[in-house]
Image (cartoon, rainbow, N blue to C red; front, side, top):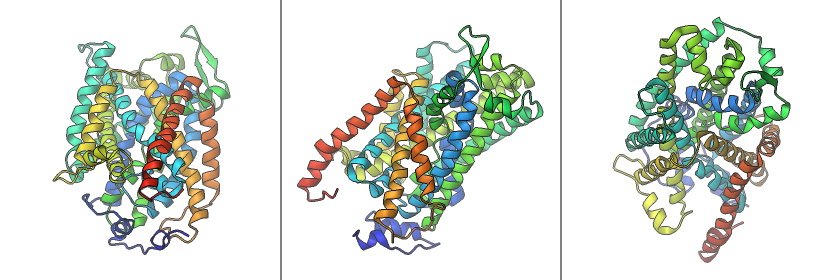
Length: 478
């Protein structure tokens, strides 16, 4: 039987989330001033819908052609189900570690640590991938800039350092910056969707059920098989992602525990709508599919086709703004995840003490600096497509374990208070688990090996460091 504090608690519209946090054994040290709307803004800024569709979507089209649209719709349905799972779990455990905090409570310790490590590694995958895309679009906007891969990496590193400096401010300042950038993104999306809806070139059924991609000659179009569509799922797992960032700001969200659940669900639904509709309408409105798929930037090709070069430049600026906003919020979010891990002592003790430091502005400054600096080095050693694929597969593993953990939570703690209760249980976690198994199995073996190495390292670290340490301290409870 779990401890009583794990079973029953009373939510409150005034301070339920803070009281639940303290009941779980944590002190309120972060600045709790975000509303549900503010939380959703931070979550959507982490998603950066313009960046997700126009940058990650570019990678998906290069791998699966217009089969990326079918992959986007499948992943969109999957994300809606994941949103229900996270809403329930986040309302029960409103701790700033996000997915890390959830799996810690919902899974046996070895599996929990696999999810923890696989999730935390994304702190050093997503920001450099985003920043490298930002560098590419800046070079497109300013042809006078050096056009080499090294120049792209240098631009990306500078952008990451700027994001790091913004992330060191308090959460209110970060939220104001996020609101400004998100508003600009939504304007860009509105303009892009307007020209797409005004200029449909083919029916939805064609891009959904008759997908094509460029042939080997780079000119002709060839059909995409269903396996080709599944190959695009790995990238779409990364493209339609970022919504769990709402959980990362749980300790800064005012009011009840249910507010945390509402924030993550609304963020997930908005993410699906914005990313999927942008990708779908882009393929529908493309004047020439071969030119669209062969372009270095398919969305700029559409904008230039209907709005001229000035229109393409405006969309390009929107993508750059979105990318910068996204990487800033990702660094802000993931620094809190790393901070929560240090607070829970999952690293060697000297590292825990360093990463657990909070500034006078009530931000985890040490974690923010580490994430920003490591990411600024990563841009010199990886390609954007590789990073996006690794991030998508890592995310798939984490979400699969979260789905399994939600079933385990209902079985292990049937009487626990659930301020936001998942409807249709156990259907959502069963469907999510099955879908993600198929998504992971359909990826290239080289990518599976890389992500498999993350899982292997996590298990070795747990059994050779975490477990012996907990056993010595009398805290082992598998």
